[in-house]
Structures are given as C-alpha cells and as structure tokens.
Image 1 (cartoon, rainbow, N blue to C red):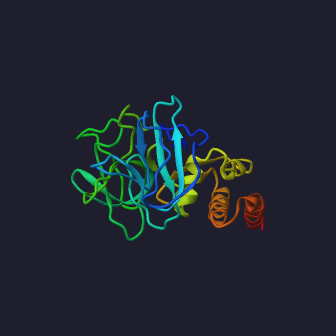
Image 2: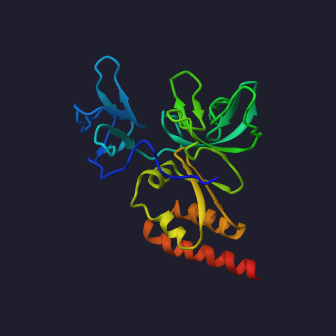
Image 3: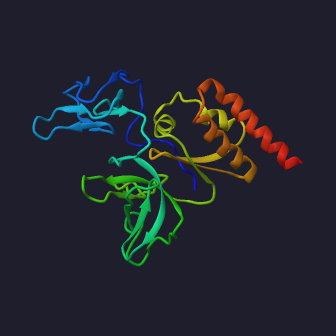
Length: 255
C-alpha cells in the first residue's frame, strides 16, 4: 500500500505568522475567514475568543482557496493529545465485537476504531486486523472525558485516501515536533534527501511515529536509522548522517 504525505484538507502555504506566543496571548487571526483549530489552541465557549494554551510558535495557514484558516501552536511536547483531523499511526491492542482498541502512544489511553470506519466495510465484510498490526488513521472525534475515535478512510468520500493497514516496514518513535515538520513543512529536506538513496513508502503520524518501508531490508534499516538519528540532530547534519547510514549498511551486507 502506498501512503501519501499529503494532508488532503489543508494546503500549506507560506505561514501568515511565525511568532512566539504564551498561554492567553492574543492570536493574529482574520475574523472574516472561517477558522479551523489545531493543537495548542482553545475556543472559549462563552466569549468565542481563540487563545493559545501552550507556549510555542503561532502558525496560521490558509487553504488553497483562501476560504479557511488553520491555526495551531507548534510546541515541543512528549505527550500526544488527540485533536480532530490529526493523522496518526496506531497499534491494534485488542478487538471487540464492533471495534478495535488502538494505542497511539505508550502509557496513554487507547482510542476506538470501528469496523465500519474502513472503505466498503459492512457487517459481513469486516476488516481482519490482528493484535500488533499497525494502522494509519485520522482522528474522527476527540471530546474531553470521552474516548477518542479514529477512522481508516476519508469519511467525506468513502475512499481509503492512503489510510489503512501498514504492512511490513518499520516504525520509528521520534519527537512530536519533528513529525509535524515532516507533515506540514514543504521545505523540510529529510524525505527528499532519503529519496536520493532509495525508493520508499512512508507514513507520518503527528503522535510521534514514522513508518517507512523499502523494497529490501537493507534500505529499510538505513532509512530507519537515518530518521532516528536526524530527529536528534540539526538540519545541516542530515546529509552526512544519511550517507553514513547507507554506507554502513551497504558494507555490512557486502561482508
């Protein structure tokens, strides 16, 4: 299965703002354009004021038509909190009569994945996932005090849209901010650098997980080790890190 990095609902243009904000600060938003809330922001139900709840970089992005603005705070955190629309990679941990329980991160509450949240799913035609399988999904609901729900399809079209079972490959645990750069920053060079050494499939979850798969195990391991090391290094070191990892794996196999 080929997995696309396209965020489907939002086209990332040059951000309107990239400034440091603190919880409670006023955000630079256009009140005449509909707003979609992302991580790190909160809408007061009484005043309808939109305020940041985390300290970080303010990001305001328009979609391709300019009729909707996405606002979120880019902050570094070790704990993932579900937000509607997030792309996530989860592990099946249990199965029930009508749904699966999926773990999105270690030591956190599981989320629900209904059997009907797959393309062409019916009561007779159910998905056959096993405990331990990886799935690429989108957060459908994330209400407070309730279990979050995810789906392995685009509910607006009924198509898989790149979501579903992630077969073979390896999954890398990286910082949440690193995953957001991979998904939303068109200028982030890591994947383009990797593509010069091998062909691969990749899925990025904002819950701090990156899945990668190549045609052979040697390249898969080289990509895994490159992504893991690059997540802890500066961008100007990426090129050398990737070269070294592919060279090490190549020499190991040859020997």
